[in-house]
Length: 160
Ligand code: ZN
Image 1 (tube, rainbow, N blue to C red):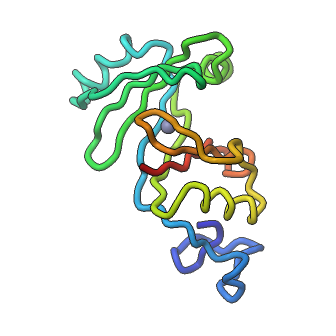
Image 2 (tube, rainbow, N blue to C red):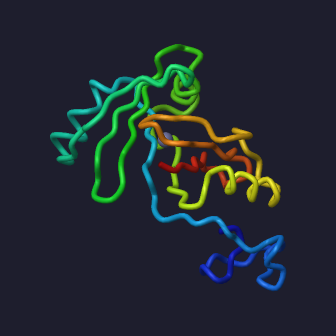
């Protein structure tokens, strides 16, 4: 939705509904799929989410190639993803080292293909971390956009 006036996003320099082919947003985002939160320890974090906020953790899994363990909790139509490093080289370990525990990324649910959305982002000169979709936690197809291009928010695009 970069500079998409039809969706009420403030118009940017490159936006123009008259130049649909190059600048209109065609990717369809239906909701915030989850918020990713970096934690030092899932076990130490879960009591807060479960006993204070009353969310239910329904899945914990390790994503080997990301060197993370993830725990998912449902919050209405969306989810919280707790991320714990399984190695000091994990990006989560580095994130916590630099910035401490906290919100790590936002994930949007894409309805018409992460590959299409990635291509559209590249066309709009948004820096992508993944050049092609890959399999993430919960078997979703995911790809990340670089925070340098997304106003400081590490952004994950995902689809079922
Ligand atoms: Zn995520």
